[in-house]
Length: 426
View (cartoon, rainbow, N blue to C red):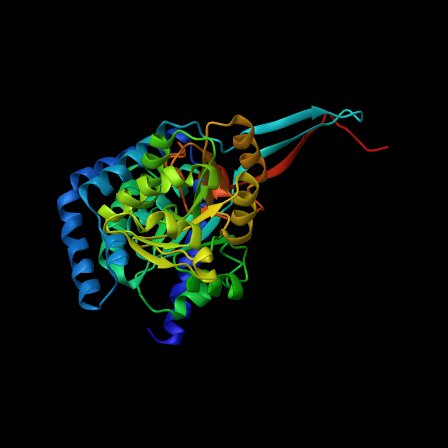
């Protein structure tokens, strides 16, 4: 597209979304739920056809030399599609929060004041790699009564287009406007700059991708942004802990899948259990080909592990989001040092403590400054579907409006409602 055509196209997307948002805001819950259930059916019916479209994206990505973790994020396997379908059904079964009034209180003047939950309006979603985000964003947009404009990465364009067609089919068959979910049909990067600078049409922008993308959006957007920059998550093995459980959870948090933002990148181990724990987890990681970047104390304890891939950690390693079979390992004095390390180096995404000490667990929950904080659970659970939100639009490490996995409530706002009986102010 040339510049003029890009501008016209972006403005058309925005104006269509604005019209659709008004219709979505007043759509009955039953209609929105019908669309979600129909979308789940369509995903299952079209699993094989979707994989054909997805194969073209994967083939192109591999030919362009995209890294293995990034190619992995592109895959629309039957399992991934089934999870998307279940997410739609989970959302359909949840209560509709739109129109809910909370905190209604009688005031001395006679008026009653409360807050009503309402859709944000139109959100723009700019994401990379994972095409399943198309379904997560669309389904949450439908449930929350919003309209959305989705701009996926060029590496997943065929998959995203195929998924968006199913979304619009589900909308129209259910009596909702097709323009409630629009996918940008071009990979022209000029369009992104225009989309994030249309406050007359777009109420919030949600970037989901690499640090470079999110930094650019945060810097240039003229509308509010919900974001997270990194997923540098930690698992802290406390003294005392159940060693067998700690090995199982630390293994899962790192190796269940390497590419997601909720995979553990930093392993902290209390000095009191390090001599027992590190050789155990070191053997597990060695067998799976995970490189361990260690401080001196951790390395000394791991040197005896057969086949272990060990390197000396640098200061940068404590900040690093690897998205790969690499983990930083550090021995700490105890819970105080663990909390201090996490608050200094983490990206405030998700951090976990593995412990049998209730006081340590409570301190960790209170004092670690992250969007999700866990006790005796894998960081891989930091996910909207796993949290019972049906799906997530992303994970926010901001502190205002929405924090952690952003589900239905994160895509709504509150407005004050005042009820009177001819009330006047004196």
